[in-house]
Length: 236
Image 1 (cartoon, rainbow, N blue to C red):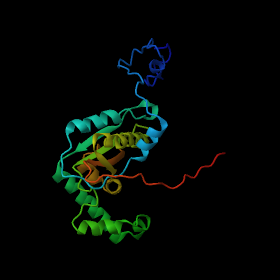
Image 2: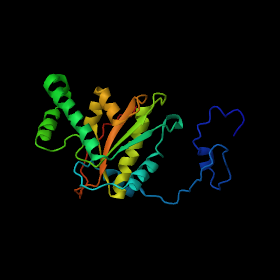
Image 3: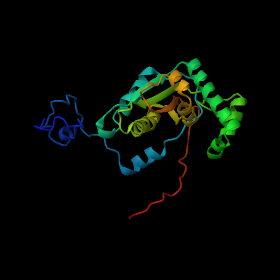
Image 4: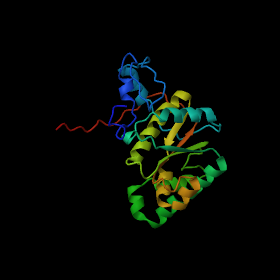
């Protein structure tokens, strides 16, 4: 450690990673570093990123714990503000508990449609969510076998950003393992409105930052890469 920098070092490891000969070490980072041997080109990177899809139809198949563990181990490499690395993970695999959580969230959506027109104005899809639920289909968690919640404590200055990037890493990596994901925005809305649901899910009380994602084996396969709107770019 450079004298005088003990209190401000972020333990990012850049000082070790930058040396091509591996001649540097850091007394507080006793990790084994690996070199950049595998490199994808621009075209491969573009196809990889464009291939990412939201999965809303899942097989009735259990996701192996080893795969979930591997997903999170990769997601931990996502950047965090100040290299704080304070993102925590909650994994729910009990089908009855997940179903109960979905039911509570659906009730919140139903009451929002009934009693809060302003919510429907900003979320015009909510009535369809309710009617889909009434038809016997889970429109909240999509009957996914796994519910993952990333969260961060209050002292994580940019906790929501940190966990969002980490979830994005997991979201992108999951298809390489044959898995699919979907950001559970409806559940997030319910979690933000119902402290009791947040407690039931198991999110720590001192974690104001959180977002859920569902995970499972997709029951459909995508064969094409849909286009997107052209970006709005302003150079100043």
